[in-house]
Amino acid sequence: MAKPAADGYVIREEYRDFLHIGAVCVMDALHYARRAAEGAERLRLREALAALEDRHEVADWVVDLTHAHLATTPDAHSPDGARAFRRRALQEFLTPSTSTEGVPGLATA
Image 1 (tube, rainbow, N blue to C red):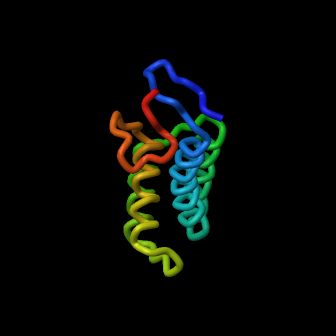
Image 2: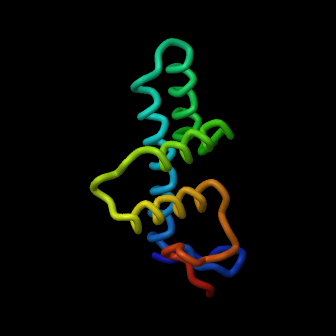
């Protein structure tokens, strides 16, 4: 169901799903790094994951980690278009744009 927003956009379920994909990119990077980490670094990664899940907070170092993860982790099951879609979802999750290009579920009212 669409919900009108104060800025004149109609926010649809597709947009919420798109933002969730951006959050999942961050979660994937944190989980991937946490598997190899030990001690204090592992705790720091777990705390960053909790901040994301509980408060939707993403520290700058987590953003850098996520971009590096997307750039260096091969995804044999996804075509380049899917990788670009995930990058755009991450961008929208971290910093919503005024442009609706490449963002599903947004339409002007």
